[in-house]
Amino acid sequence: MAAAMGDPALCKLQFAPFSSALDVGFWHELTQKKLNEYRLDEAPKNIKGYYYNGDSAGLPARLTLEFSAFDMSAPTPARCCPATGTLYNTNTLEAFKAADKKLLLEQAANEIWESIKSGAALDNPVLLNKFLLLTFAIQDLERAYDNLCQTEGVPALPYFLIKYDENTVLVSLLKHYSDFFQSQRTKVTIGVYDPCNLAQYPGWPLRNFLVLAAHRWSSSFQSVEVLCFRDRTLQGVRDIAHSIIFEVKLPEVAFSPDCPKAVGWEKNQKGGMGPRMVNLSECMDPKRLAESSVDLNLKLMCWRLVPTLDLDKVVSVKCLLLGAGTLGCNVARTLMGWGVRHITFVDNAKISYSNPVRQPLYEFEDCLVGGKPKALAAADRLQKIFPGVNARGFNMSIPMPGHPVNSSSITLEQARRDVEQLEQLIESHDVVFLLMDTRESRWLPAVIAASKRKLVINAALGFDTFVVMRHGLKKPKQQGAGDLCPSNPVTSADLLGSSLFANIPGYKLGCYFCNDVVAPGDSTRDRTLDQQCTVSRPGLAMIAGALAVELMVSVLQHPEGGYAIASSSDDRMNEPPTSLGLVPHQIRGFLSRFDNVLPVSLAFDKCTACSSKIWDMSDDETV
Image 1 (cartoon, helix red, strand yellow):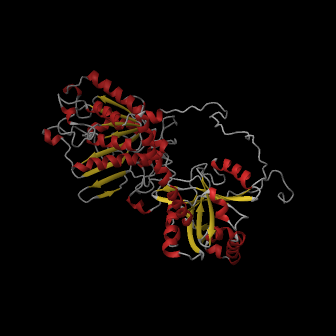
Image 2 (image 1 turned 45 degrees about the vertical axis):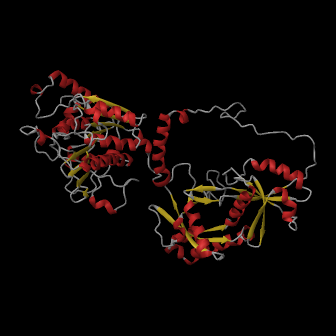
Image 3 (image 1 turned 90 degrees about the vertical axis):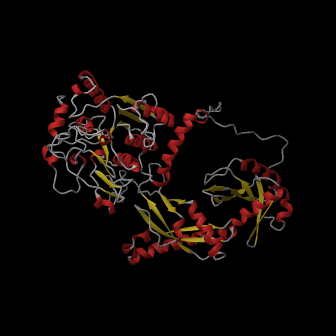
């Protein structure tokens, strides 16, 4: 009743129309079908498209047609709604213009109306979004234009004449217009080599030509038809289907010897007529070129494959790599592939002769004269590979349980400084990668990272097995600027978790030490040098390192970040929680079987690294 009375508080409902998005693959497939199947057949054809509701802000609502549009049984892409329609493809431009477009639209509307009246749309709602596509074949124009250019010995002609002789397109030079049209004195069609790609407007070259036409032809022709000829090649397929055609009325212009007023100065960035400044640093500086290229490779994933991918979360993340050996080198290279700009190494070892063949950041020269410190050499090599990365290295030890300080070469004072330095590094980074050789060296970073609510990604190797996992991210008592995820209070009951390994949130997930009954000890004691080394199949570190980074990226893409519910092997057939797929707790790989499993384990309430007793003490700075 309020609407009928014209209540000003109520707004008129409006709708955003579809914008057709015809992929180059669609035109290529249509070309092949026209040449090999349809030929001169102009009968309507059934086609299928789809629309998606997850595009970035600012993009129009798109109805997309791809190469698979002609296969009505082809699957619709994930999270997209199908839309069926009818293709009307005419053989000539004249037939295209002569088509009764109003009648075609009414026919399509009647089909939708009948599905509404009969109730068929209730059983198949796709019928409510039927569409029609009217096209015309202009291969003859393309071929005729190429032949004329070849005859004249020029790469392209800016202007040319067009006429149609039954089903054949003829083109000619402007100077031949009198002989070319002959009986078609009432209508002239002009082709313009148009550099503009706007759907509604022609480019500047048409402007002065219309002045010429008005002076030379206005007494003979009331109007001219203009075809803005647009020729482009995408992915090896030539396409002129985005050309536009319209009619221009020619005013009668009295010949004057005086030049008309000239326009055309280009405006600068401020909208005025002053000079425009061009920053050539992107083109002249090789470092800027490298940075632009890295960004482009990543953006192509968004543009072509994963529109919802949030690259800013990945590129801006600060990663701390504890360990610069085989795992550390491979993790660093994969991080750079994702565009991560901030990478810090911590290691106390030096490069030995056995390292370069498995650790891709080092070379033979790095082993000479006792070997360079790994952390410093790795950071320096990243800068050489990509100058845009902010890479640092710290040559320092990490105190370990079972390794008394007073019995090693490190003094107690140095150990204290190392702990302070490690705590500062973990505090200033977003993600901590545990990539060390021994189990006990991971304990102190795991404790500190748990107390500071930092995301921990752990990777460990056997001979032909590996584990990659994210530690459970404890809920902060108060949300801080550096926290990755929303805050929620944590209780001891939460840490006890559930016996059911399903829908387990990130704060209930276990860490690397949750399966230990006691604290880690010295795993190298009473072992020979060869027994102390991690002996693995050469490809294992590359696989585990890559999975560790991909796990981090998947976690960052999840709305809940480190608190994301853990995906298990049972979830492989379900709808993935992120645009990149699953977000597992652990990935355990068995290279001998070429198999991976995705187990989920709950946090142990008496864990020596992440239990509430331990990290509450860490908060009080008593650990």
